[in-house]
Image 1 (cartoon, one colour):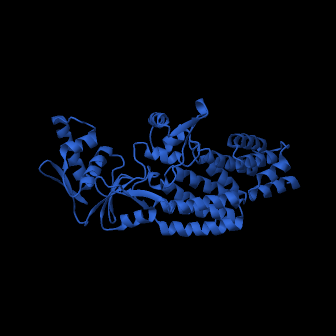
Image 2 (cartoon, helix red, strand yellow; image 1 turned 180 degrees about the vertical axis):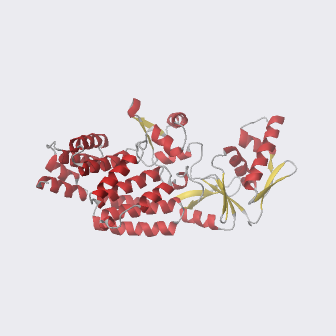
Image 3 (cartoon, helix red, strand yellow; image 1 turned 45 degrees about the vertical axis):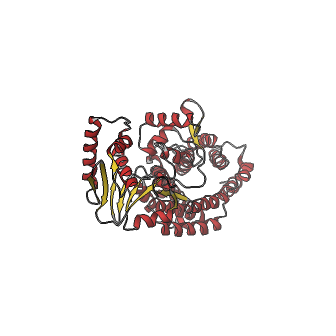
Length: 409
């Protein structure tokens, strides 16, 4: 490797893309193209970065597998920044294996960290755990890689509401980032730490009273309390270590939430029908359906609560918990999770949003059209290159809305 390539690589390693470009901007050999691609990615020119990295990979070809694998890893990181999540991780796994075989532990570890972050964006904590478990401890001697690994660990802990573990991981990440001296990495860690302090949910007070904002620590304490907690953030029911998920049962959860709002009093049958079925003038068919759905809810939640039929409606009765608490999301609406994904400031494709939400692209397109009409999201690009951007949701964090693929943990 010549001196200019080495100097450009060192500049990129400390987050100085301009210095790197000054050394390789007019060169077209594969190593220079790869470094130019990484520099353009650091400057935010992601589409051009991807083109340069693909040209570099073709230039390396099969005769230089290490150079080609490094380009694959760099392009995967650009795809992650572009929220292009439709690709599988097989190519990235193969590149990591190639780098391992050629004793390039640092770039192999970087590849696995990218895979872990992709799984986290998709809400797949189990797969992220596996990718993180495969990290080479020797490569984590690099402060930059160690900082990213700890940032991944912190996000996984936050998703599981283990805030002490998250805070410890962020402290280690901050220390490693200070050694690495990369400003963008320090800023990302600081933003992750701030998310722990912002309101993440709201606690229902009473009809007519404004809900009480709660930070993540208060949510963690609430779920660990002996109370029966109806969790509208992740559509579930908690009582100590026992839990019931209703993520895929929206009608049943609508009934459960209405009963929790009325606890300890009964809730009128007509009010339950309006909440669950949207019927403003209920008839006998609606009342029959209500009896069926209440029966289903009783069966699912039987270990934790009873639903008693009373004079004009139904009442929720906790079996062992001293009280019933209702936890509300920071933002309401059918598209709350979609807004939460778009609030990170990145441009998401429809296919990536569908993957993250576990819905069909057509369903996501309808939801995006409604949000666009309301002025809450906007489209960038056209045709197949079209992506969606949402306004940042300031003042609170949407972490509890970003787990659609997970059971309550």
